[in-house]
Image 1 (cartoon, rainbow over the protein chains, first blue to last red):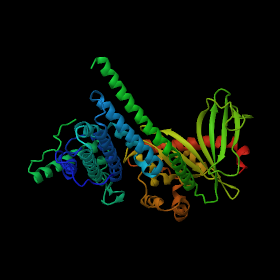
Image 2: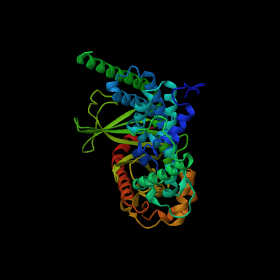
Image 3: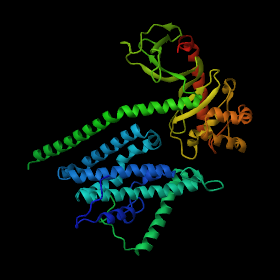
Length: 220
Length: 275
């Protein structure tokens, strides 16, 4: 990743605001409710959630940067196919690089990495943010959204692994019989619903219900 | 701008995007393909060596099996993994099992060959050290791919699930060391009647299997010899509450071993001695 900029242009939101926005005010999973399907599919353990979260962070940042740099050449009538191609290129490149240089990680998450192409969160950030702002804010928006997704997957993964398997990061913790239900897909939906409610309650208490998304919101 | 001009611009824009994307992907592929293949091969060789408990001096020959529908023959191409001294060899049989002449690997007639999976033959210090056969079976959702390791006397040395899509927390447990450890040391004679039970696994056996993750198979088997002796004649304990995946894998292992032994009876006079 490139170095942090010393000064951020005044008009678009600053780096810190954009990152906090992705983590909390517009958290892709808990607030925007985007890409819930993969969030259910992979978060049976913390490690799976972490691995996919990192891959999404990388794809989001690289795609946002690419779109921000090339936006004046992308014909507006075909911007969605163009974004899809950009995302697919980055996903495939990361997929091949992982298979070549980190085979152990690839064996764990290889199946899910390819699915990132179809993640609604990534294309919606390209459409709502990267296509309208210059490089630096787009980079930070990508970082914020990627971190927000990573954070959500980690929390859901920890919740489900602890309840469904009695362990955390593969280390057995909870005594007694785990509630297998939470490791199964149906339990995934319930886990996300419970965590989303908790997240929103905390957020409301902290911000007094006044949190406003930095990019104007919108549920793509 | 005219409609035709618009369409032309849009087409050009999309075509260019695709072309750039294709070029980038091609570049990444050329740059990583060599490493990806090496990593996949190294992982597979490591699994084979672990399953058979092979030392550094061991030599592993990989045998590719092909069906040639046009000539109605089955081909076996053997080569030493990691580049040994022995040259690649080919033996072939017609469908009745009689040896036939089919040229060398890479023969001009090799068109439309259907792959039939691979097997691996290990030798250590000039003596046979075991076999590994690739197997495949239908699981709960999709196929389960696995490796079966056999001792030179065809006893089960171990099973390793390579690819599966069973449910996490249920069927997916078949890919864990504790479940796969149950196959270690099963005698060849008992395999035909090897069954799966829903009974709970005895606690001493469960805790012994949990230790499999931390040490090589050979040392583990030696440390738990009395337990293994007891469990060898008992059925496989199914993963919690579900017998579909456990039974599928057990049936697959049995079929793969049967199949392997029939093929090896044909192959041994040709590939058993050379190293």
